[in-house]
Length: 97
Image 1 (cartoon, one colour):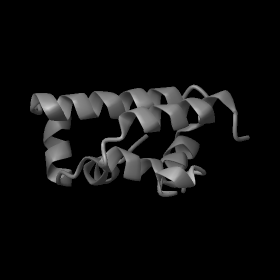
Image 2: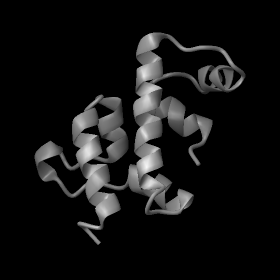
Image 3: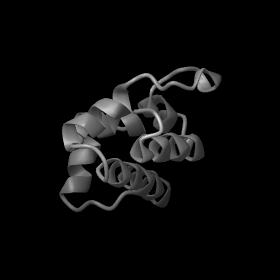
Image 4: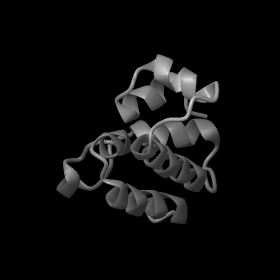
């Protein structure tokens, strides 16, 4: 669903690094945690959305101005995992359409 370039941008690594992970290079513990959290988010989104819609949702401005009105990708970059999880659960539950 997510292209290596998008994963790289979200996690602030090079696309080549993502390719190395895909080829079985093991990332460090902190990066593994970030990858797990990203995978959990995507998995949750796929409970409700088709892959292309889930990818679009990650890049769409969120409705919560209190968090700067950025995108879910911005929350990933800022490692605001709890906020992201709440938004994702709202989206999956249909709370906002």
